[in-house]
Image (cartoon, rainbow, N blue to C red; front, top):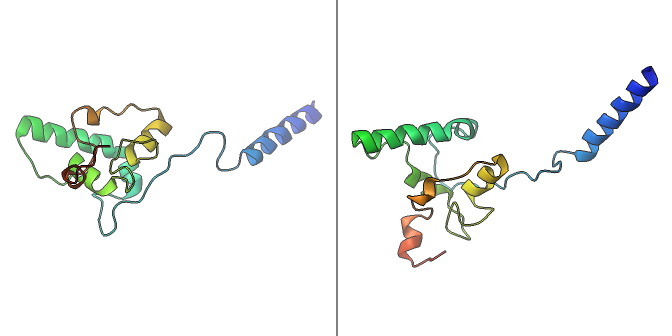
Length: 127
């Protein structure tokens, strides 16, 4: 019985080592924010709570008429839009899509909001 348990443990350890850090599931590709910018919170906090921050700001804006607050989807798009697609949601490697695909979470923000900064739209980028 001990031999079977030992073999099982060795197989499990071998599978873990063979999988390495990349494993079978590809990790999201997270592009850096625009140089010279500062996020409203550290990356770990943003990964955990960005949806709550955005929902809270949405409620303040829609129900309270409060605009120009510290947290805004527009500001996120301005800093995190891809240099290639000029969007956060146009391609699988864009900032929002890469993480949401990894987490199997549907993005519905861009059904109403622009996924490209105003500057990209003004330059005629139609992606």
